[in-house]
Length: 148
Image 1 (cartoon, rainbow, N blue to C red):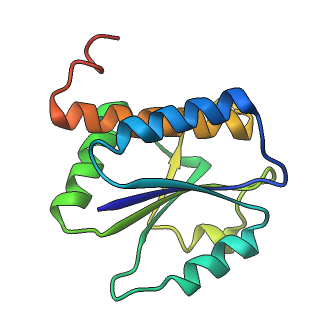
Image 2 (image 1 turned 120 degrees about the horizontal axis):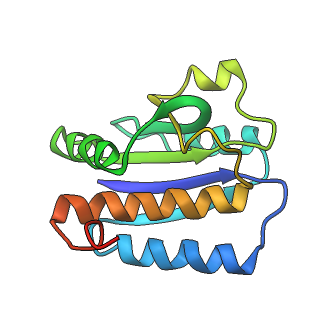
Image 3 (image 1 turned 60 degrees about the vertical axis):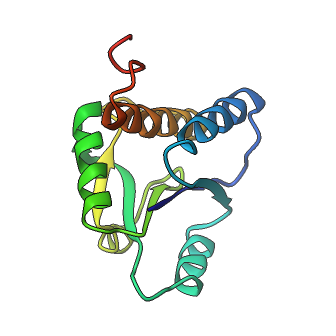
């Protein structure tokens, strides 16, 4: 299974957040291949997805304020299920500042919320990457999760 953390942002480049994202991506890469990509527009994101179509479609998880709010253990269980069912690619997508359109939301396999608080785009990337890392440490029985 491979993961992509995609984000739609008109501007990027908070060095502190970028460093944290890179650190959690590096840690998660011990468990599976993971990459990040920033897109300038929603259209560019979906064009890239369409061009990368393979035999098996990717599972698209869109971060959305109206999505499911899960505990870290719930995310870990969901990821384990995806892995065990043979999913090859999961894309976690953080939408534009004004949110996903209704039409965009219909394309998602899952709508996921990081909680009821509004987060800056860069910080949402950090939180998502940390939670994905945490989920894989839970699955591996690593003490990272229980030590915090």
